[in-house]
Image (cartoon, rainbow, N blue to C red; front, side, top):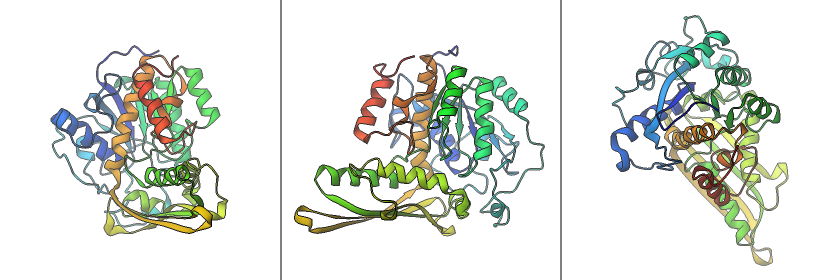
Length: 372
């Protein structure tokens, strides 16, 4: 068990993109406004508030962010998310040059500079050097926010977290917490891991799950459904290479399938990113349709259009994930922390109905749930 107390939750962020920008802004925003902060997900968890998160390091590959403070990197191109809190004078932790590995798809380097990545010429840190940074900064929690499809990079940083003694919160659809081998590695190291792939605060997946669950409760037979998402941030540009999308589609599809009493055939459900529209910037527009049958087989369908700012929507849950990881550290937990993951992530180790998952999360935060 780490030597922890009710001090700041020292956190390193891997991937300083739009979601990280919203987290960086969000920490400073919550510190500045306290109880008057708008839209905070879980204002207090186990005695920890969002403003208790202390960001101590970032890891990036982009030349416009490496060597800058997190406060400076938050608004550097190609980040394009909403600037809801611009006073980031308190975000002075440095951004370090991580390895490329598979974090940068080839088409990203061929895309316009203001929309895509430009690699830093600074030498990339080795695993030993990343671990040294984590130890020197006193990082207790690592948050992974790399581009979708970064399998090698996620494995690299997960190993770094283990060697540095950090809890891991995996925000992307590369399965770590929900992968038995990785879960066992963290258990053997005496470290907790939460994941995988954040559900946004009020995003397409959670809305889709709610509609599917409502249909089941009311006895409606769902026959087929889709969720088609478009957006204009680097996440959507990265995912325009469909070879990087396999686990993303699996994660989103399983999140909806698991909310239904009766699973649909593969050809009757289609969920996932559909196109990149640059002028949307960090807005995501989701088109959701469910077709089904009411009493006696009478037809019904639901059409819904959801329009959200993508990154703050995820950052709200990320700040909860960091605090839950710290609670797990405080209690000496290790391996996958199911009670803390089911509500926050699309592909947790154990899928639960959202109301039950919420109750389990709150019980865990209050000390009534999972113990060492």
